[in-house]
Image (cartoon, rainbow, N blue to C red):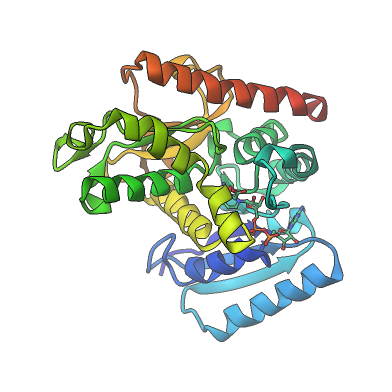
Length: 328
Ligand code: NAD
Ligand code: LMR
């Protein structure tokens, strides 16, 4: 039997938490032979702690063979103690009519404190995924607040955008989702993101050629993927939860277990590639293997794509300067 992996999840009693924890405990994220210990963080308020207790009771009632232990707490230093994986979900979600960046200052404080706690007590190789919005800038804040940890281990979730784009493309092209490879979503998890299928293939042939409709790309596909989060909020009255949890599982699973040479989109600190300033957490195409990722390099960027990348970068730079005062 393998040694258990410690997975910390914040906001564990929230919507996404409820769609996420049971799948982690059943082995869908780290493998059907990998025991896990769940270390669950919720706010230090009675209602949140009571809800967390209820979720833990349900986890217990599932009798998951891979669930080797559980901790529920309101203290980040307890939740992150020796954590191998930290999924930072807990934050306020936006409501109708808000943009994710409207949450910036309120949620930023959470990620300064949690970055510092990770720095102090987590495994030195902890893999951090930030889901709470605005995800890229929150991941940046957590990374900057954890100077002793490897910045490469701080990532933001763009996998939901990647998955949304995959489904739209599969519908348009009349192919199965699983047949599409080499898709990327550049930039910020916000309406400025740039889902880019110029390199995508189906069975080795160009998806762009198969679709052959540049008008659809600019006027339907890109805005639809970019505004999908708002469309879900409009329809459900609540932000996406099951699809977000699913994307979080995809992100961590591929990062730790490998993407088999396939491209996936992760929000990762830039190393200066594609003219993105070093350190900015940006959606890039990567391949992954055993807890490492490698950037897909030297893709040609045409004028349309450069303008889209510049736009999403400008927004991230603006968010970054909006929180600079919190980072000392
Ligand atoms: P929710 O309100 O249902 O749950 C959030 C939970 O986090 C609550 O239980 C709350 O008590 C808890 N929480 C708040 N602050 C906390 C803190 N400092 N420490 C620990 N727990 C804390 O919200 P949700 O629907 O689960 O969404 C959570 C976040 O994920 C939101 O910011 C939402 O916008 C974001 N989100 C991101 C993506 C993405 O693709 N990156 C997708 C969907 C949602
Ligand atoms: C999403 O994309 O569904 C989430 O980021 C929630 C939101 O605020 O849109």
